Image (cartoon, rainbow, N blue to C red; front, side):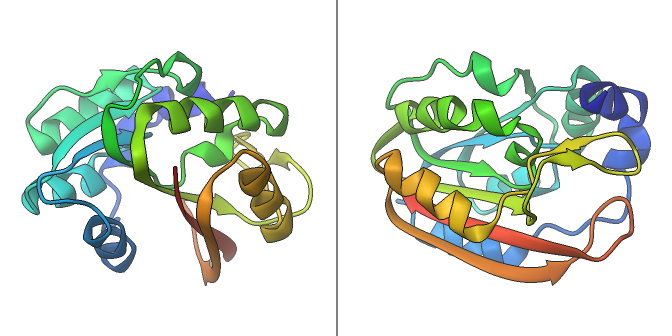
Length: 191
């Protein structure tokens, strides 16, 4: 249901008025070496990728939706790899992984395995960013999209137990595609 939503609504979703989260992106990019290699998981319409490319970084954009990937390619003018999270097979290739509002669709039971794949893909001391809609139990939104809705404490424990360093999770109020007020968790960590 979640992936079919993005395939069926790719153009509307990708071309909506969405500005890249510049403050979060800048904090992430500042923690990386110059011209660092970045893996973007769930690039959506490509706005964040375009921002990172403009700043001189080597970005590999990916998305699980082939239709969204096509939309992002129009914006950034380069190929987007169509890949589901569980297909990530990179080993110590990237200085950073950017996963803005994408891992929130991973079933809670599968999240530890996906986080392990992300750690494998990062070089030693690599930087990881992800954001999640906060909550206490998994569920679906009004569009039928699945969300894992973690609490800050649950997410913190999960990352620490998996061996991540310098785990920092901030909370902020915002919105989403559904137009509803949303409590967001923004996570930063190092391999």
